Amino acid sequence: KQEVTQIPAALSVPEGENLVLNCSFTDSAIYNLQWFRQDPGKGLTSLLLIQSSQREQTSGRLNASLDKSSGRSTLYIAASQPGDSATYLCAVPEETSGSRLTFGEGTQLTVNP
Amino acid sequence: KAGVTQTPRYLIKTRGQQVTLSCSPISGHRSVSWYQQTPGQGLQFLFEYFSETQRNKGNFPGRFSGRQFSNSRSEMNVSTLELGDSALYLCASSWIPGLAGVETQYFGPGTRLLVL
Image (cartoon, rainbow over all chains, first blue to last red; front, top):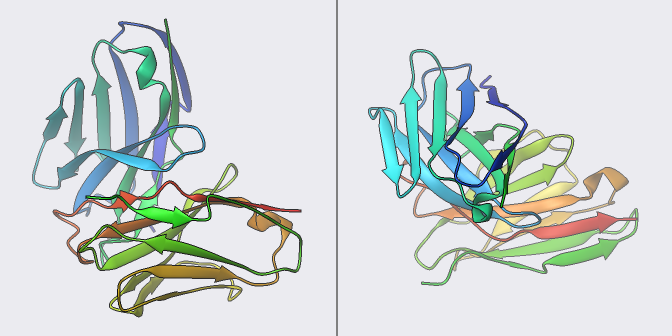
């Protein structure tokens, strides 16, 4: 059974700092890995999807990497802003169904002005 | 293009009652999945529907059920509510299921259910 872990559980940084969020998964036979953002009491917003054949994906100040062999992914946020404050979740799909996602517990990020 | 919509956004029920939540996927999307989010358990998969058929089911009791209509809209129902059913219920849509390598899922804003 796939298990997804995210470290740290919470992170507080000053504005402008570069930061890294970590995600690890136990079964390396994944099709892809997604990073989501969730604002308090809201739904999930997809940030980046990395295919299993890719090493990284970039969108603006966000860069996500994937190392299947070690079961790890990182989300790098450059020049953090207060608006980046949210919970960040990583998720991998179940091998057979594709649509069923297994989520990590999330990292709650606070960027202080 | 409108995103995934969920109604109602907030709901308060008492133990023993039943509740029905609705999800309208993005236009053209045919797969709808439901998730429960609680502080203790995080996000857990409930079920997935495609072409009006349940395609996958999570580890939840039979009190949790769902269905999908011909227009791809989906409803989930929880009968005999318990305090532990208090949660944020999220639905997600995608074009078709199984495209795990390329397809992202789009989530709605959720329905927050409080059971008293």
